Image 1 (cartoon, one colour):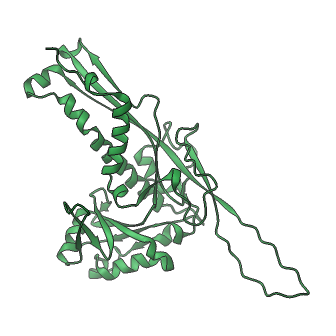
Image 2 (cartoon, helix red, strand yellow):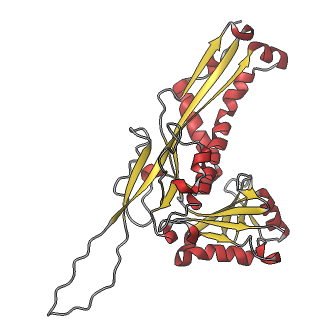
Length: 336
């Protein structure tokens, strides 16, 4: 009987859609409602003028113009004076496209010695791999977008940093968390989820601050803190004992998946190492914090589209929404 090859079990039009769908469904940000489809997401402070994310269009960025909210004082009616006609203004959010690829391969000999086909394992696990890479892009974007300090477009108003205080005042606790929520003022009710490092999660458990709620099929208990769903991910930044915890509102992270020219392909080389197979997968996507536009200086990105390191640089971003309408707060603290 002829040996089954990877090309025999991967049907591109089925496999490609499966990888994108499963990768996003596995993503904790998507599951919690933090991540929303940019193609259907209106701006929080007004209807988007164009809901088309344009991820498959030309160029490396996607412009997302939006209507600003109505503003200004009302006027006293006076029959000796005319009312002043005010206009509604617009703004522009800008997302950057990310184009990434990864190739995995294995020799026939490795499968023979292992007793199972490593390429089939690779095919089964590729969706999980891309889920982790999408999540890494989210955290890189968060680091840069929340770290922007551009004059008049800074995100400083959405950052609560107690790490420089003395003693216990620098340590995560319930009161400090409430203060971080309070940075959004009368919009703090939008915050519905929190991403924490596992070390912070463990401290929360020691403080007996977490509620565990069964999901709809009762298979897993989902952790909540102050009625906010917890996402535990060690990609949350930690440096020199200072941890960053993120608070999110629904739809804070915009997402759109595009279609690379060849999303996946299988190749076989019969001569190398007695026979080798390769699986190449490609991704084109937008991962964007709503209200903080991609605004790099000259020479960035160095390549066609940015790396995660470039996404994580605050100088490459600028706030375009009112700070209270950006549905993200960064809370910096210590654990001891």
